[in-house]
Length: 135
Image (cartoon, rainbow, N blue to C red; front, top):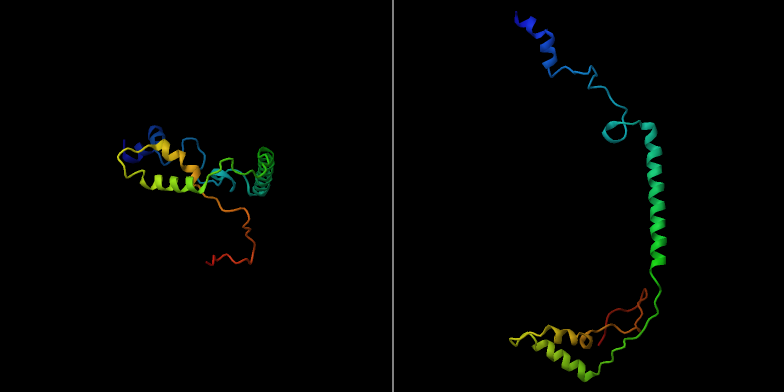
């Protein structure tokens, strides 16, 4: 058997990996759109519009759910009244808390209400206002 006869034998053709076993040409384009090139370009616009429509509906539904889930609360003042003397003591305690060998985290936490500072409600921020603090 010559080399040419061996190359054209049925067994050699079955083992030849350059030939498709199914007979389908691997270089045939599939249509041009969609994942892995399946689908058609004619459907692409409809699919994109449908996706945008679905996204808008989900956004509107989530926005409506967020508005109803958050109850409106009235502004209430702090129930903890701290005198200036208590505030100074708490600040001094916090400054010296880590200097000693024993660190009592619960005592530090108890002084947090005294040293927390919030801006006063009387200050309003509007456009064009002078925001530079002049002493």
